[in-house]
Image 1 (cartoon, rainbow, N blue to C red):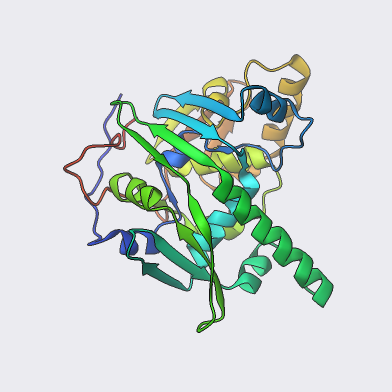
Image 2: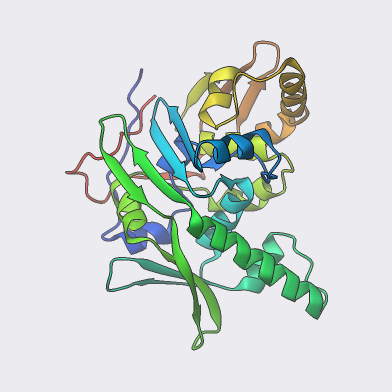
Length: 291
């Protein structure tokens, strides 16, 4: 295992770190967001989640996550990425939470939602705010490889600024601390290309590789890391491998090489994706950038 060089955070506070980040690294290295677009009630994952009292526990070499109340998908992650990328304003509130304000119409435009009519705008707004409510429903307990734990919700509640006529979300103070102590990654330059990809599994794989300077990984290890349910049936694996082969060009666009015969992924990083260190490096709460 080779330790990669990581610079200390260049930011004085968590607001400035969030301003220049798309996501925390830790939430992409443990599968908080399932590699699917949606989870119908009759899906295997949804049934298993319900059977386990609405709890899902997943572990990778970078930590363990316990997801409660609501399963999140790549659709939810798409929305969070867009908000972090196209936010108009950031405010630190007295309780330690942070408000991110954004234009609903701008987010809809980037997410290819049709707003050609008043009815469409109303439906899209309802759908969008429903997704934010679903994110707020989810409770997450994260444990790093050193045994440090943190319990948080990502979104505490929705907000609206009448003065600026902007919608917003309030980030849970514990999630703000999670962001402050851990690594973050800025892949805002890749958002448009990332969201153009149809396969949620491919999106989740690409997001995972964004958290590294360079890494090689076998298919099975990668599927486990992004939360793909293993073991899977022969038929499921055939469909999955076909999807990955069909997206080789998409992987190449992000400097990810997939050898379908050897079933190995190779990633050497890219210059326009940036990884930010913890603000409070004295805590050592979360793992360093290693591989």
